[in-house]
Image (tube, rainbow, N blue to C red; front, top):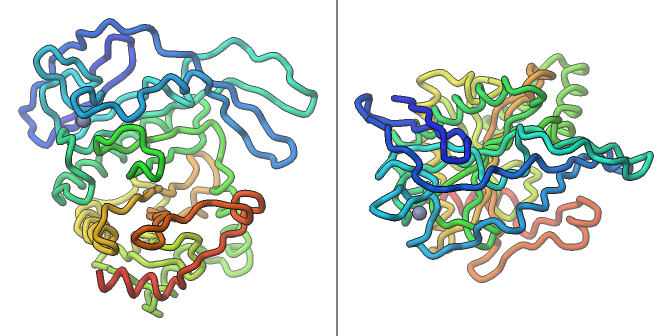
Length: 357
Ligand SMILES: [Zn+2]
């Protein structure tokens, strides 16, 4: 893989990850762009002990442009996009409308004595999986998935080094039902300046388990799922995909490496090669469930950058809000108000349907 880093017209970084070692990426960004906005504001909610990012400039961002105005397609002829080259394999660049960035805003004024405020320092990046506007992740080749994984490993390592970053979260939102604003196949990476609430809760459970048994909680759960097999959807020598016993979503699958590693950079060569075939098979099963493209969220759970790394266990959480061909699951009163999920489909049945798809 060849890595080429360039600077866009407004100073943002862009990195090409090319599968050919002789790729030349010297096209300049010919656009005239205003400077990127300053970092958003983080407000701490004392009642929940959680941070909220207030990013007002994001209201003006691009929303479902027609295909001939897609900012993630390569630049061709007179049409200049975010990617200056006329083609690419995988490309990563800093989001033009980031929720978190390294560009300091003015020191925020006090809101209440109970509401600490700080600049939203961190980073938000966009990952384009292919230059083909009409493709989807499920239609990538296994070798392209490997390139994507290598790019995510590169970015996780690099963003972990940024001042103040505590957690790196790569994810893909797919489908307008999920709220995707650009149809071109792409994912995102958020580098947060705190450990996220979901990860704090997973780590607290893992810590209690380690104190009680000395084991890694996620590894022990994974071993039990592999031994039981009822909820396993697919597996190979290095990875298993299974529906969690207490799945929150109608169709939810965890894809986990058998070896407990904290994050993507820690995966070895064989593990990285084995991921693509299994994950592509799983995505095709998702799309095959109702014979319509499945809206989904694919969320990489990585250990925090600085703390509790030994308690973590890398896994990809893939889930959909579609529960039937013509029905979506909405987060209503119990889920949104109280955080209690009501799942209409038994996890064992979901695994059965996915195995048959
Ligand atoms: Zn496009």
